[in-house]
Length: 57
Image (tube, rainbow, N blue to C red; front, side, top):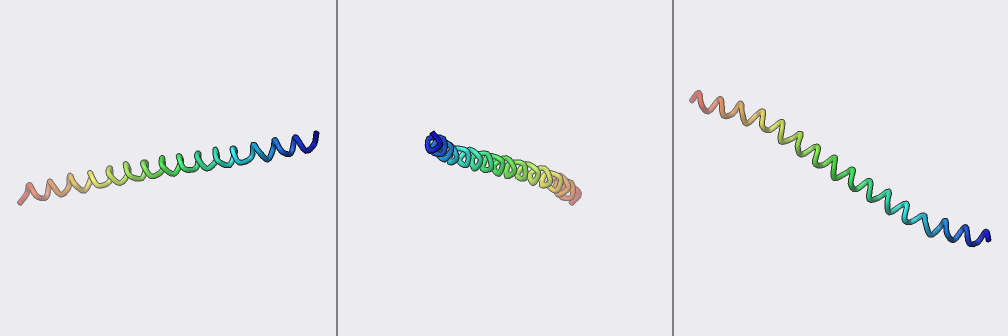
């Protein structure tokens, strides 16, 4: 009976690791999107100021 339990536990372990790596990958994707949106937001600030400067000339 003990061997069966060990086999079942070892069989379930890779699934947990796979699920964990999938979660980590999703979080990395979310962080990349968050960084991208933050960069776009910062660039819009500079874009507005450049347009203002060009209007003066």
